[in-house]
Image 1 (cartoon, one colour):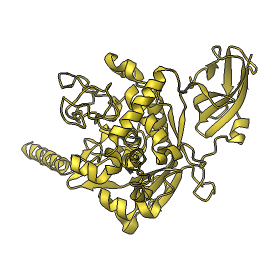
Image 2 (cartoon, helix red, strand yellow):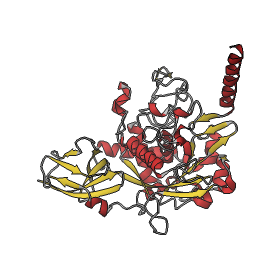
Image 3 (cartoon, helix red, strand yellow):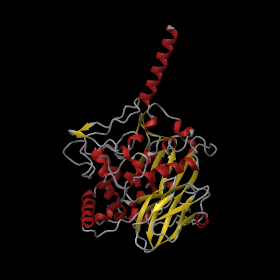
Length: 445
């Protein structure tokens, strides 16, 4: 018995030694002001100008002078693998990748399964960002991709572990696709700086044009703009059970439900951590509706519960914000000010503006559309959608002039849409499914 106890203690000691040597952190964002300026001066040097643009749009909203346009961002995923068959190891499957895109749209659309878990004092701050993401259909030469939005590439020299600088220098320039047309995402084996393993990191939007210096920061960004995520932090264990998302250390289950990419896309669209200033006197993320906080959320990895009552700066902090460091299953919201900041970036950063106008996706899959029926049509109250063997996800309804008038996700039981509040006329119903995007014309009487 004594020898068994000693063996157990030795195993525990070994386990905790490994964990201590290989800590995993949520995000590879630079820590110091000097690092931020050096690495991302094209963004941080223009915060005053960006804040003026945000305030201008806020005033326009209050005067009802703006329409709530929805933005669509096409994605190419560069799967950097170690020669494994598709679906094994670092060569992750298309199904795993699709779960990540689903999580991204649910989070930015505020229609995920956990919206009711948001703390009462923060519920009214949560909203739909009206930003959506779709895997690209075409490569830069206009050829249809064999796998929608996916490109598989062997790791250079079989390398498994990367620093940010090495990856930006040795991989991105040789593999990146036009950053004006694609959100480039790379999945890799491991990202490490010193003894710390990171789940991912992102570039930031180029804002030099706001300072009257167009393209000042764009030279390097042409070769590096995008997001890098570890392959076993890409996708959601809630949507697909694969070994990659179960291959984890004791902290790992904090990060296997897809929120690493939600967080990094926030940076890609101009968001900062709520605790960026690391004090209680300055709003470090420039978003007044996120509570002042002096440090990141702390999660006990041995506890499966969300620690929602953490106090920072004399008040309950917004543990559930996507831009903090909570566990994936505890994150539930972007605030209205964060959303306004992202949407402003999509309208003032030339590279991000171009992304929303990209032509690398097929907006209408006509064969898929033919396999979906809607009835009654014409209608004045509701429509039902019939799609045998097709899983319906979400929908948007547009005027023929292109204005979005309704959007939501499908109730899998009824698959019906209440259109009773729409004025009489002809509309386009765009439907997201597990097989692509379909469009149907509907007539409201």
